[in-house]
Image (cartoon, rainbow, N blue to C red; front, side, top):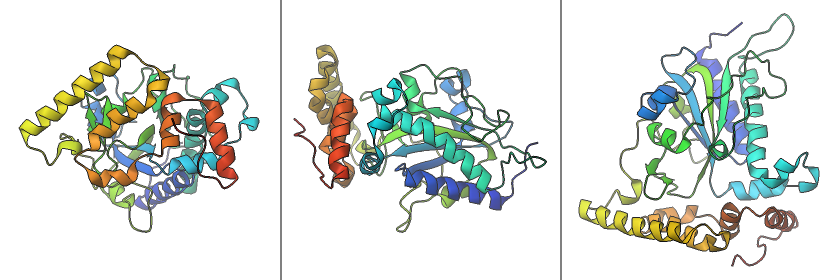
Length: 320
């Protein structure tokens, strides 16, 4: 049996999900309508689940620089259950926990129950950003959910960078292959898209708006597509052309050279070049250790950072 939600139930769901994601270090929680992406050319070919809603609640889940310390605090490789988890523990952390807290939030709002005689479900689906480079699993319900409630994500990977622009979250820069956020600049990561059989409206953005007392949520009061690159918002058209030209030259030099993890600082410099006209983005810059792991993906370095952090030390080895 499906449930027709009340406004209060949806508020409880969003509040619970926001709280749980914040505890996981996932401080970006941006709501939007699936139809805003489905209306695009890419979305028409590979739509997000709409669950027969005219405006379907979907949520971009992501993180910024604070995620690093939250993750290090709980990172214990000795407890890993598989070789795949050891290879990329951050992806598995998100894949394991985001569906679980989504289910819990639905249960908190009394929108999901498996109690005998009181069974009812609200369908939901979760697609992960790292599935752009790996084969998506078939879609396994998280522990405690019923198969009729968990819907497998689209068979073809959702292009989360394009979804983010259509959703009014972050502009996709096709030259840099990076999304740029009005507040964080390029210093954030998108982890997943949560799709729920609930109606979306602008009050969802108000409910999840970031405040002085709650730093988890969204800075956007709507989900209108972002059409202008925030990095160049204050520049004249001729200046934008010069900046884009310089980005193209640098990108082609990096691509011609070929990917080498030892050149990670060159890729950091390329990313940072998007911020030269936005000093307000400097506080969001990742730490050197965080960027080193992001580009080099060395499990042993991550473990070293975790051990030292848990011992009260901030710095791992030299980032060079």
